[in-house]
Image (cartoon, rainbow, N blue to C red; front, side):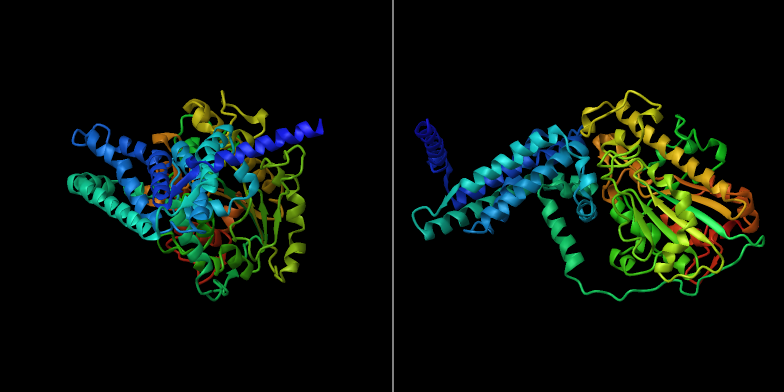
Amino acid sequence: MLHKNTQIKSGISGSFHKVFNSNYFSVSYTQFTFMVSLYFGVMLNLPIFLEFLKVTEGNPSVGILFLITIPITLVAAFNIIYSVFAFPYIVKPIIITLLVTSSLASFATLNYGTIFDLDMIENILQTDSSEAGSYYSSKALIYFIFTGLLPSVWVLFAKLEVKDSIFKEILSRVCSVLLSIVVILTVCAFFYKDYSSIGRNNKYMNMLIVPSHAYSSYKYIKKNYFVNPIEYKQVGTDAKILPAKNGKPTLTIFVLGETARSANISYNGYERNTNPYTLEDDLISFQDTESCGTATAHSVPCMFSSLNRNNYKKRIAKNSDNFINVLQHAGVSTLWIENDGGSKGVDKRTPSITIDRSEVNEFCDGNSCHDGVMLKDLKDRIDSIDDNNDLFKQKNPNGDKFVAIHLMGSHGPTYWKRYPKEIGVFSPTCDRADIENCSDTQITNTYDNTIVYTDSIIHEAISILKDYSSEYNVALIYLSDHGESLGENGIYLHGYPYSFSPDEQRHVPFYLWMSDDFISERGINENCLRDIAKNSTVSHDNLFHTVLGMGGVISEAINPDLDLIQKCKS
């Protein structure tokens, strides 16, 4: 029996090596380059071909011949580029890496409309394993196996040979490149006007080409790891607190929302009641609020910094104080509580607590936790906040406290995991990661349930603040980092380049709640503030200055034109 099994194994192994050593896997470098280029140009770039179909739909001047040139042009361009790398020892690792990553990029673009620019690469690289796992689906796995894994296996075992002689191989490659150049020039001669017009009006399309993510990744690495360090800049070191007239210190809770969009907020005109819990809290909702970016990795550092969207530089923000640090300069005790996989560096000089999402309890399933987990021990954390701040050698002469909680919020695509089932009020829901296979109604219902749950978290946080109102002047600020696309124009999730991003990804909910004592002691004209909230456009640019203004901070770092509180001092 042992001898028979050995024969069987030997036969299988022999057949395996026979297949991979056959002529089917023996090609010249020139042939290999063309085959890979053909695969990238036709198969992996299906998303950009479909995008061309969409943007040219109904345009009688664009004919079938133009559409046929799209994959031909891509194949020719790839053939030129990949010929540069078609050398022993380097070509296979490069192509396999591109195949694996391009398969994933192609799937994301095809199904979610994802564009892999510099900000998206940054967002991906800062995504933790729990969040990354939420994008898994059987459809994604099958797509990856057939478009990424199997072609990579072929490349791995392909026998690349120099045909006849090195001279003939070089001549063959030069002819192949020249032919590709002729093809591109010919296409330009007949269709340059069409390509120019479409490209000028749809500048995002070049970032849909696979593997453009490789270039974006190169730019990210160069920008973050091959630049000279800059000196850390302290901001607002002159900050002082203007004490309240009633002698009570201030307690503020800042709720950093995640992936909530203004379009689905009932306060902002949405036809559904997605804010049932806070109706009794009489929030001030700023109905036209623009975000700094369309992804967490960009928006969060930007909104906390003193920089505005137009002059925001990650390196500068990373090496400068944010508004939490300015509060610390003024003597406020601070605390950061994290449930979304990271503060993106905002809590770098702040006592922080990260929720352990590996636990299994009433809030957590071992992979993620509902945001209610952050409120469970919030009172104890508020009461002991000075114990943590002692470690950071901060002084708190007035007793003011500031707590920031970073929600998991409405982070997709697994929206159904973001709220307890009993709180869901809209059905049917989309209880799967590949949301593109759900109906628009199911996606919207599930997403709206996350907004309802966030509303309940805000209401509970306000209730906790009310319990402290006899000791403190209390207030709450809620602001989301960016919005979300739910399938409009075939786009899902977030992270689109800001210049081309849909409105749903850029407009976010922004609420204020203040106790009567807080309003009175800070001399705020509430009607003025509500008028601004209803009729004016505000943005993340206002946050730094408004938070400090609310806290009674006096500092040269505050721009009164961006401080919404200063605008409404009575």
